[in-house]
Length: 554
Ligand code: C2E
Ligand code: CA
Ligand code: CA
Image (cartoon, rainbow, N blue to C red):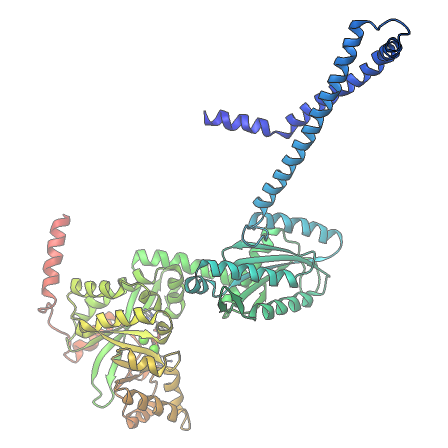
């Protein structure tokens, strides 16, 4: 039923039908005019004469035909006028619809689909005129924060203003498009060998965008990353590429620019393709590795510097990848964070680490690193505590390490999470202290249990005139705040001696050996009689629970 209506409607709209009717109306009018000329010639003079009483009245039939003729001409003409008007209206509506389909309603830039067509057209024209073509992808670095902080209406206003600024700088032949929420692109021809002109334009774009935007009573600052691709190489030789290829290459260059720290631009190079391929390989690998349990905990000793006693271990993640071998967390953690997989990855590692650490002497602590992404989840603390209960691991033995970058996210939520963990006995340390943004105010107000001095400061103690005073100052700061300290990255005896003089409390680093597997730790502890006799009281309930769960499952 609906289909028929849609069909009729469509039929009615068909310009071909309108045109046909148009032609018929015009034909009728033309035939009527011809008839008028033929019959009018014979009838009109007779009629005029009879009107003045000179001659016979014209034949009635002929006179009627004449009148009918005139009526037909009027009808035909009116119909013709109506139809041309209708067609003009329709054409306008079609143009409007086409415009809507091709542009982004907010900024009136082209949309993604129209951009492909526009690029192909410009490409053909540039090729004919012996010009080169540059395709430029622009991505806003911080748009999400603006939306979150000031609302979508403000975000929209900023986007519109941004487009105005870009349009003002682009050459007339350029085409500007909005490809997605905060992703833009433009394509423009340029003279072969003058790629630096495009660079100049991009630099002016950066400068213009860097000016603050004052929209809806707020002032916001934007930064963008830019990736470029061209169909000519640096020497000006043609390197033909169709629109989708150019777009893809500019995208890869943009990705590279983001990775290099944002707010910069790069031209596509072939090596970027490998970079992206590696990244894709990592992503699939991480997904597969997570399912196959390839992520394993390694442990680094933490030593009391005064007594030389082993006090605990920091768990450090490793990926035993089938294809890539042993992969460092510095490679896979950031990717897992971006993929949204850091929480399940971390949980898998914690499960193993709690099981491992339950077998150790129960005075030994376990430190685990928590990503800022995990802290964004309001249920993080609850879930961690639940996990501890399920694993039968005493919260007093657990220490979590968070980095300073957590502190400039949502400080209120971070405080809530830290507080609820501490209420249950979990300790919280501030990792990599000195490299980030923690203010004295935050240090005073956030309930940390410990500061870990970043290893970049500690390594510099190697040189006699190194940053001794800086480390000294950090230690005094910790003392002033009443916070115990750990020095990480202690690589040799000289550093250890220097730290001992400063009275640092805990230390960890290669001087005590490389991070070890669970089995190596077991052997180390067994050798010094610090392997707990399993299962201990805390472990008991879990085994019972396990048995019950197993029984229920079978
Ligand atoms: P981090 O928390 O600062 O961990 C210390 C890093 O320094 C470890 O690198 C460790 O192997 C290394 N290290 C230890 N002693 C020395 C030394 O004497 N000299 C030098 N040069 N380096 C030393 P690793 O294991 O590659 O971990 C790197 C980072 O990855 C860690 O830095 C931590 O931020 C992150 N990470 C590791 N495991 C996890 C995890 O399970 N979750 C999260 N979110 N991050 C993790
Ligand atoms: Ca750490
Ligand atoms: Ca650290």
